[in-house]
Length: 118
Image (cartoon, rainbow, N blue to C red; front, side, top):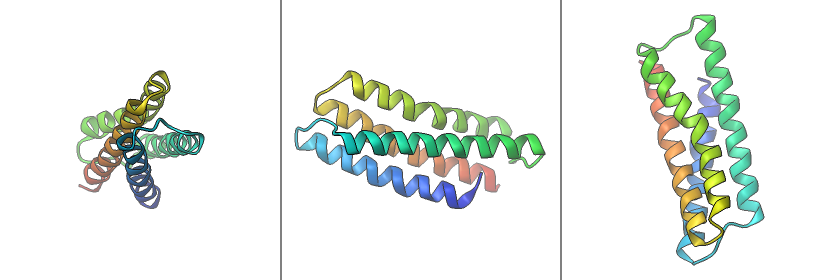
């Protein structure tokens, strides 16, 4: 894990998640800037996952590798799945789905950092 990138993911995903959830609460569906933000967040999460895998292969390992890999895979797959599901639901619930996925990514990234630091 690269800590500055992980904190950027956490802050970005919380901000994006709140933005999407507020849109859902106002009865609005996702707009193009929100989709762009979700795709950028998914790309940054993918970069973080690649960095973590490279460090794992290089021998820099957390204390519990299996738990870390589980969190990392879930984090990497959740954003694309959330965006895809939100695109399938072009109502206010698409905004809620995307916002929820963004907030879960923040929590999973924090857990990855905690497992990596042990």
